[in-house]
Image (cartoon, rainbow, N blue to C red; front, side, top):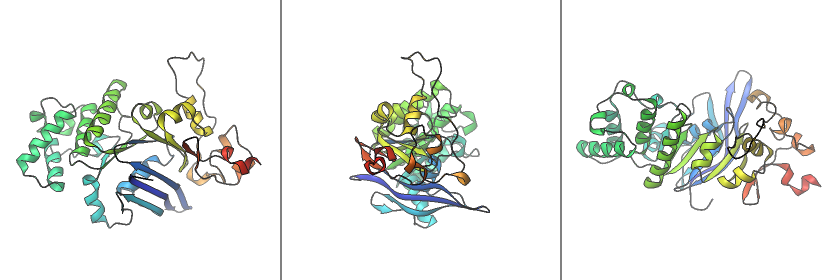
Length: 325
């Protein structure tokens, strides 16, 4: 946790329903260092987006943080009142959503929205803010930015809208960017451009990035470290190349093996049998054990914690001596 910009400690997110309390994120801990890209990968429903929403204070009721701490740059932010977390959102933490139209108001030009964001968080005159916005739009690859600032979101293509959203997230130089599936709605050629753009700009501005996605190709391309998430828990955390090539947890290994390779000829892709459990049906012990080919006695009754193994953190009984004995 040394020199961590963001620290998540034992985060637990619950939903109160008529069926009782459902736990969507359970005892999640990790840190993000200044300037690094930290990827969170897993199947849909693993709790990735909820973790990002909790960090930025956008959890929708009945969802709530039931336990744990979120510490940004030495300051705890999960218990701040609404008006204070609004000041942090945008100024210190930027957000890039999967659908650009979620971030952009269709009634205002993109220039108006960017300039107002800058004026809200930075001590600038309107003319200086306008110059800053135009420069940033050029930086994210919007041609003829002086003219395009007068256009509305619907006048941009999907890829260009996502570039505008990246500019919106970066316009006040936040310390942390949370990118939630930023390339999912785009075609493959545009995805590659957006990935390269995000990586270059965050390096240039010195911002740390949490990249939330189910696409291991995106994670391998841009991330420094990666966390593999399953059924609300972290299964493995480590340097991206080590996890991609030598994943330790059976679930992480299954994800890596399911990625097609241009170097190997395969008749069929490997797959992980079964599906991730619903929140109402998460099994006791390790949540992955019903699908795990290496499951044995402790997995079905006791939940493993993350422990250090070969420069990574892994939550699996296979790597605990006491479970084998």
